Length: 120
Image 1 (cartoon, rainbow, N blue to C red):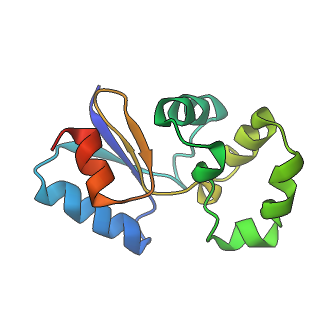
Image 2: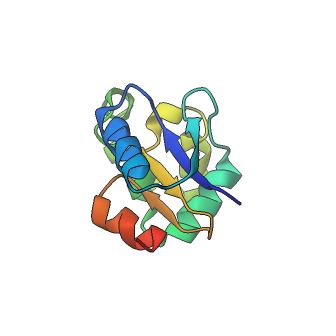
């Protein structure tokens, strides 16, 4: 399994993360999150591998998140419902997401966290 970089190419944080990966010499395959939306099962696998709360997989800064009033809706939704919702639109998903060759998953970009996940 290769390292996968899940991105939205117009996102400035994704651009910064991609540049960081390249600068670290990490070989990866990029996946456009809006064109290749993750399935609910992929999201479940990533979430469970990440060890972070499911809420961390939502793009809480996104327009759709606010328009849909998800801050309130998520409080009453089951995990299955939340994963199904995330799978409907890649732009609802926090990005970038790093999926390492070893199966570690890190949503969002922080160089020190990604460095640790990649063993750098």
